[in-house]
Figure 1 (cartoon, each protein chain N blue to C red):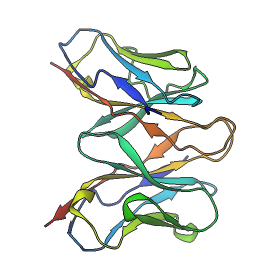
Figure 2: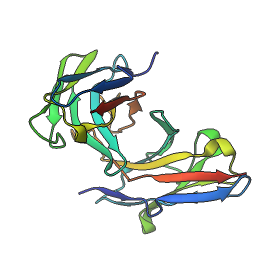
Figure 3: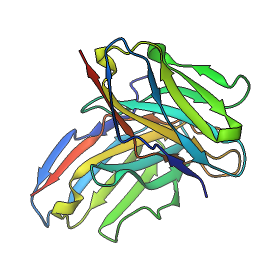
Length: 116
Length: 115
């Protein structure tokens, strides 16, 4: 398996622009997670999906952030408009939780976002 | 609510020395416990996990961790550190059962290795 795939790996944009981050989870995984990592705040869970349905978006910082999962093999995280404080590494992870009661997650390589 | 504490933000050890990274959790029952490692510029990789059974678990790269229920701890150990172990290490706790699928991560411990 290719693992969790994220694109782009690096994104540099200007304040006010729309940014879309993409994720392809591991085939067969039921859960998909979006995280943000910064030096100041560490690793933060933004939102997670189960079977393409958003379960908990309480970590989404504000309305500028939105996430979708139109099908089991694709998810997007969109920031519109972007601000310099959104600069961070964004990770996508997937989990084969299904009906099993464990939570091991497999992480993608991350997207490093810089907003100028 | 679940929480994870990694008391040490940064640790420096000499190559060949032993290592112990601390992790304490707060949870009403026995949780699922994980250690992840993040090398610079990389995503997180699972080192080891505890679900049940033997409280001493072995992981990749020569790491092990011991679950101690009485201390609510899951410390990570390695008998002899290699320079390539320099990275950031994250402890995480997951809920058992139900519909909750997320992990709660600690703030991480950055490991530096002196030659």
